[in-house]
Length: 97
Image (cartoon, rainbow, N blue to C red; front, side, top):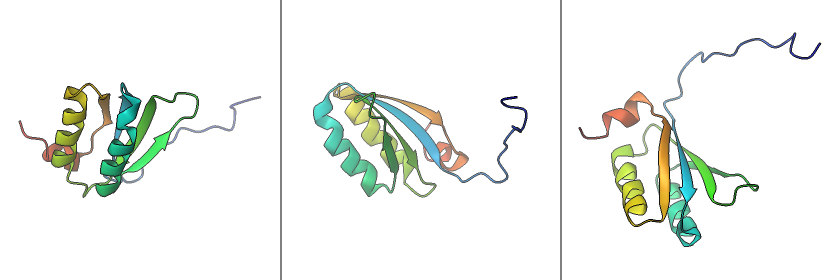
C-alpha cells in the first residue's frame, strides 16, 4: 500500500536558514534581484512552470536586516511581492521593531 512505509520527518537540528517566497510583478527586476540575493549568499530556486515565482533561502549570516530592506525597496517600487515563509531566530533578531 502506498504510504505505509512513510514516517514523519522532524528536524534534528535547525540550520538557521530562512525561506522567502517572491512573486515577480515586473519580470525586469529578476536579474537585479538575483544579483542582490547572490551577494547575500542566498540560494535561489525558480520553478519553470511559474515564471513569475521564485523562492530563496537566506543563510544565518546573510545580514537579513539589510536583505529585508532591499526586498522592501523592490516591493515598494512595484517589482515584487514577498512573503517570509520561515524566519530563523537569527533573521528575526536582525529585523528592527
